[in-house]
Length: 362
Image (cartoon, rainbow, N blue to C red; front, side, top):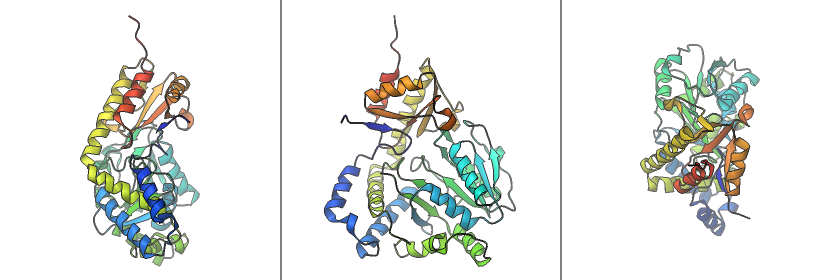
């Protein structure tokens, strides 16, 4: 089978060192150890230590491990929201979090903009009666980026809310403000370049205090076994409530260590360089234009282009062994979505550009 390179927005290309770490895990028996063993506790502690350094969160934050970001949505809504939540919606995934709030009866408030349009500080209000504000830092469906200063401004006006930031397709590229961000969460199959099946949330003491107050008032509606509070008790012992994705946690710690060795400044520099190549190419292409037309709101990690020849372009790249994403939902046949994660090389980015650039007839 021909080697394929995945530029899909997730799952996506594996980080270069993952194969070696999997081999080491198999040889050392990581996949068979008990999640109650000292060996697992050491893996958990190492991964948490590496991730805290990579995220740059304060030491008093707790890292919790989940199966997916969708599960994190449920935990946040069920444990931190009683009166209502605020959702900044400008894409399919921010909309989906809002819909979770509707289904759980959490009285969510939707602050909506057209897909492809970013939020600014002028969109922020004071939310005295609501407990949580959801901000999607990087909309994987549309390639809209919300600057991290936005979260800081929300928290400044609303110091008592829980600010929940979806960094699913922007971590670890984007820098984040702490402690203004109460819950930062992401899945590993995007920028971290790992197999799907693991998600991470960095949770602040304030978020746990809100969950505690709701539990004491008997206003939370989640199984105590999977509540944020119960998960914290286990996390403090370097354990999880149930049998976790041991291999995923192990690999996450190893890749986080690799990224720290390389340096976040270098990763961000390379990401910016590749994004600049792709956006300039889109600008010059006769059949394409950037879906997000405001530079400050255009994602550097998920580049989305409107195209008149989606099927033809996807097929042309597939013949070269490169798989990109089509548009999400209603944009399926109108957009190309090209992931730009740390695992993606500049050489392959140039191959995308060369393959889809029309030949000029002189």
